[in-house]
Picture (cartoon, rainbow, N blue to C red):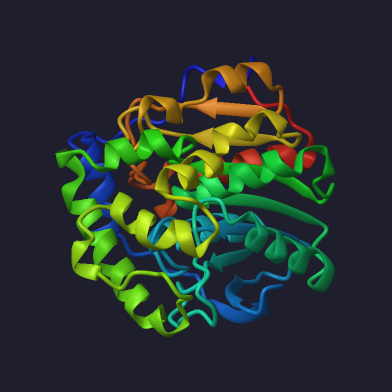
Length: 327
């Protein structure tokens, strides 16, 4: 029954607010000690993704996937890479299509369920880089992607993929979208839309016939997914995309040690994003729900600059690597 009932996370005094936890690290956190080296890999459909390596000369690596409109230099990405570097793992930050500073070659975008790109990166790390052990970590959209991938692969996943961790993962995209469209989250959606629409304008020369360029009509993330994400990636509409790409649909198939860290006060996650029943039914799936933490927050002071989720994820991956049972 791997639902972890007593999380060890305690928010610092005066830093327990969900929006405070969500916003402060984004605006003010600085992470030192991570130096990236970039490698580009081509995807089977003629596009590319960029990987940023922070290497310590290790045979094992953590592959870290960012959230919506994120990239490798976000503080939460560098913080996670640094935590694993300190424990002797190479860090690999996965920039999704169009998120590394250069536009895509094709009109196909990244999205919450694009596991074919994640698989291409995994295969590159195993076959070309020769890592003997790999842990997958994803934040928010990248958390859903990571969990979906582990569930889809099931028992067919490479034995060198030793663990998976989803942090602030919108396991049910419909539920998460309902939360995102509430007035309390207006600033988040406004920020996301501003950069997403800019990317679509740059990509417009690649659009196939029938794709709208009526950018002014986009008022919500659902509008964006209806107009761009869905038709550019083979879905009927936003709802079809959300339902088919929600990791909760797949996680019963997970066959490697997997941890979901979702704060109860996360302003972006609806009730369906906490898969208690699936965790209770799957001995490989651990669900930990701290009372505080916001969305990709988990602020911690001291601990050599590490946030709680970074320490927790690295410890979980090491336990999985060495066969130590979780509490």
